[in-house]
Length: 308
View 1: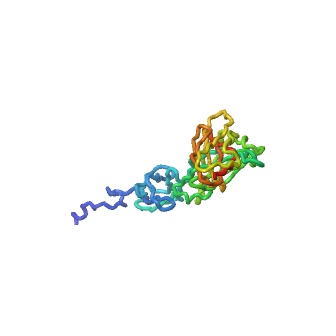
View 2: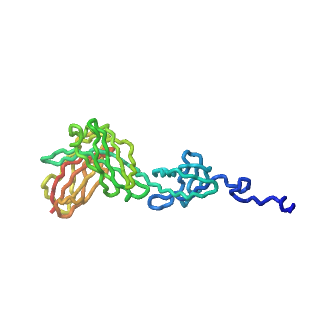
View 3: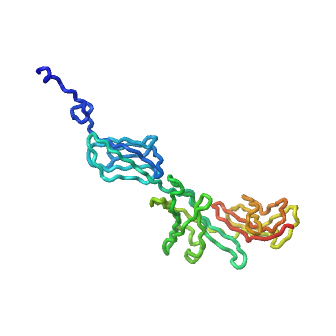
């Protein structure tokens, strides 16, 4: 009896404060994924207020050991909206399972606004418009984008127009009529901002950007002229005249069939002449765009001719 009472008990219970294995904190473990279920590495998971924190591993899993008590938890990763829990009671030695879903924030890339001018001939003549374009990236995939729109700050109130998706970019053409005095010049110096809304209701926005200048009529066609008939299998000189701008431009020659299907395009032309060796028999139309260093462009009136 004496020997039995004098022996020390084996104290290896993790709930025994005098045990060397005593666990004095709680345990929170779980996984962080995006909205389509892909695990996210490098997500910061922490308590609120921030006293205990960790990051997820390559398969999106984490383990956090906060003191016992009442905590809220948050998961954060760049380009994603944060996910925050309600208040959770953490007990000594308990393991709480906690998973997070992070929604990717739409990111606006390459947002720009340019001015455009085209000589449409009678009765419209010179027509001006603004062209807005951007790329939108979403960590959850482009299919998660719900809508994209541009906002222009005006003295009379903001002007808003939606952008349409076309060949990998979002774009919009805006005529002069919504602007003050119906003139495109009033947009120079005005901030443009593009916003993208995803299907979870998260909005990403671009930095402000601007139309750098209004471009005016720069060139007009000289040859071939309207209703010219040219022989097949002979070189054709396309000649235009420039109205000297105060800034440098390059030219783009656009050659189309009469149904407006594009046949040929020549870019980055420095001269005012292009020679095409020969063309098949058809009715054609051609025009020239003058493009400045910002991408603003001025387009000459289209000229029709026939090759027989």
